[in-house]
Length: 509
Image 1 (cartoon, rainbow, N blue to C red):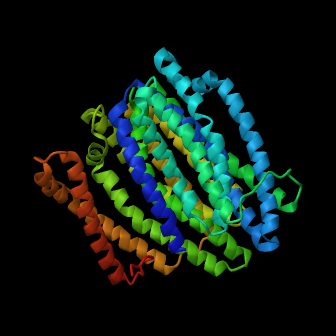
Image 2 (image 1 turned 90 degrees about the vertical axis):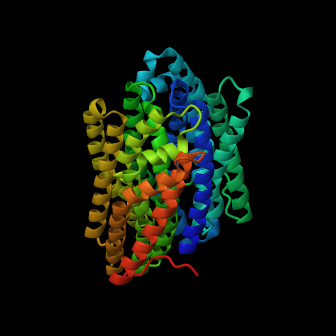
Image 3 (image 1 turned 60 degrees about the vertical axis):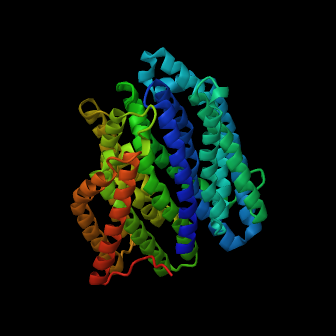
């Protein structure tokens, strides 16, 4: 499992690195003004629907159903199930995309009502979203094919596909002089990347002999189980997206730049989520599904504990960094071209607020696996909606006084509520069985995090004195803080784990 985790996380790292280049270019070219706000709304909309109908809900229902069919009835039956679902998914998405393209002004009115006060921003958001929306169709098909690959323990191509999104946007920005604006170029990059990602996973699935083809849906027991699991999963994923929709809606009511501040901070907030949380959940779900299919609960729980231990070990430095050096992070990453020091300060407040919730956010995928591996998608739905209700209420209460950072803080509190409920409900059902190794490792990482937080002010003073007079001082300061902080954390967690006799979930040979 660790090898598969490393494969997914390694390609995700490449995706994040290319995404870093993409975001630096976007910040440098567009800054945080009107054009950037319109672009970020346009790229968010298909991603909202993708998260509802694609990777979030769909994977949680499809992967266990496909893995069970593969174990019980063989490859041919699993391929028929995948083909039936492919046919239905494609039909639904074509209809949805056609309606959305036709009624795009109405969609923008719902998603960003504050834009209507600025006709130029509103018209640009409508145009850009019409360009990006077909991405939803292609990336949802990518999700289905990726699910079949994952069920066959082939994770590489699915993890590598998002790299093509970043490369396509970078290439489009390089040709921005051919478009009305850089935002138009980036939007076309998103649309084209959907085709490229679909081609990548389809070719790899063909080579692995697991590429589904269109099959008229039959009323089989396996399809019924999938649909029973999909309904609550879609509602649950829709609920999560309601909270993100609320961010966009409320941010559009704030002064120009709020949408961009949230988007730039969210880029960095998504780094540990993609590298660690999603990678762990992607590998853990089929792993637990296979073990539970053989009625081997002990091995399933051991895999989950190992996944969660690794997740906590790797996430804790991000938690400390987001809370202790958010401005240094935003300045070092984005402060180039049109992205100013004021933009960095605004985004830093949002990043710090997001950082409060980074630990539960990356653990949720591993906790949800307790339920989804047993094809229970209703319980996570309940936990998600309670967290979302608290999240949205806090957003409404805080946005006028705290601005964009209030929206991020509400997201963090909602994540803690959601993650805490999932852990409690799974534990009460005996579907989550943390062992003493996991408990000791949590204590060891907590001690290391406190040490890192305590020495960070000193590291900041020393690193600033070394880099202040150098070119690109903000970027060099961030690199120096990252390297020195990484060494402090690694040494601290190693010593604490040894003293507490907590075996690390990862060894280097």
